[in-house]
Image (cartoon, rainbow, N blue to C red; front, side, top):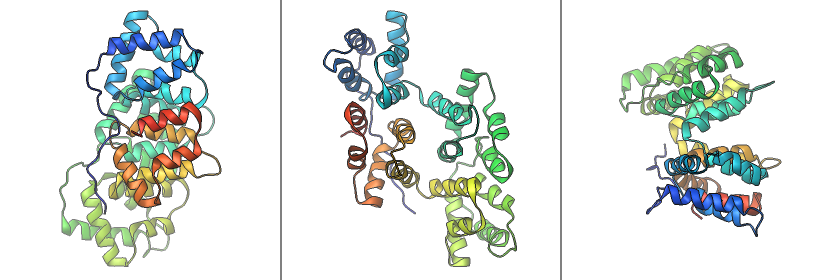
Length: 322
């Protein structure tokens, strides 16, 4: 099991002045189209400020000009760069709420987004997201997640969206042995699968205890728990359980894998790329970069450089600290 000290790529800028930044952005917006002046100003300011500082800039812009910064930028920017810069202007809780809403809006559901957010966020982050979702959409996130999903996948996400996982580091060896046996008896040993046992244990135990359970499971069966999930499950519930297991083992490794898939599919998945970089830059993106290099023998900067272009690429590389 890998463990890193989490490190961001974006830290609060020194000598920060939100009012001056807001004024510079207004000047750039008024002079949009003049030799890339707007794009350069936006990148130099918004891609080098922490989330809290970006929110302060937005508030000052509103106070100074009685206009919304995001709206003004949408009118002047376009394409992936527009999506990336607008994403940076959300607070982290609102960004998660917006992404959850997009995943459930209209016909069909983007289950991968629901899994990514709910499997990787802390209790505090999930509860902040729920409050932001209520504030933005006047709807209950827990309710919407449940009605948008079905079966065992619904049970898993219903447990995760409650935001009440044990987050202590307490471990109990005897209990780990007992639960490893329960997982074995509910899966590989059983004809059919008792999905409820996997859901109950994997969605509620703290990460330290989960890793002890997984260790005991391997001793018992000579296989990792991922092997059992791969053999016993399919579809969304399989992907959901695997995501939680990966996050319990090493969250940076989980996100490195998400980024690699986004960058190396049949075409670049820009929505996922933007979501991960924006949501992790103030938390652990430097750590994710380290794990990406370890897993794929290539820097995340080089992978992004090869799959993106123009000012959009430059903005992403700035956020990565390149």
